[in-house]
Amino acid sequence: MQDKAFIIAIDGPAASGKGTLARNLAAHYGFHHLDTGLTYRAVAKALIDQGLPLDDEGIATSAAQKLDLKGLDRTVLSAHEIGEAASKVAVMQNVRRALVEAQRKFADTLPGTVLDGRDIGTVVCPDAPVKLYITASAEVRAERRYQEMRAKNADADYNEVLDDLKRRDERDMNREASPLKPAHDAHLIDTSKMSIEAAFLEAKTLIDTALRS
Image (cartoon, rainbow, N blue to C red; front, side, top):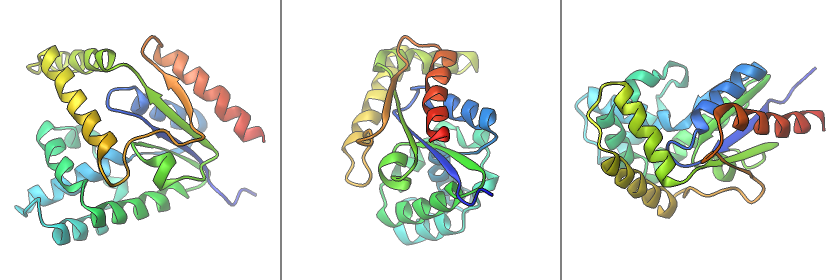
């Protein structure tokens, strides 16, 4: 009888395709999925909804400790203003500590879990049997995000989207706490010229091998 969850850790920059890949893999294997970026957005939304300041680490940490990971609504939490607010609370050490603890508890859910974010393989689940780092060129990622926004009838300018992604990459890769980087033993998948299906098959091959070992 299985007594330990099988963990798939997926990291990568925004619009690299890691979220779609993570959801597809979770559905295929019957595993639980967590987009860890939504946990930071959920903390920010909780503060906004209660009219609380976004720059008070004690208040933000308290909100993080009370967060229910089962009630994360991707549609609601994807709002741009929530993302901006989340970037402010995500740099707080105690908030990160509280959310990493919650993410680790989620990761231990049987029979297995898929977590995607920016520090899963390096910080949250460094012992995960499968670690994937999903990337793509900034230009390709910006085009994807631009097309997503246009599909939702949102005002979008490709150059602004590209500049925003580059700023986000800079912030994520150079922050002091849990910077975005591949784990030393992560498998790199570059989706710049790869379909979602091809990326899924490459990841599935790696996972199937690990499951058999």
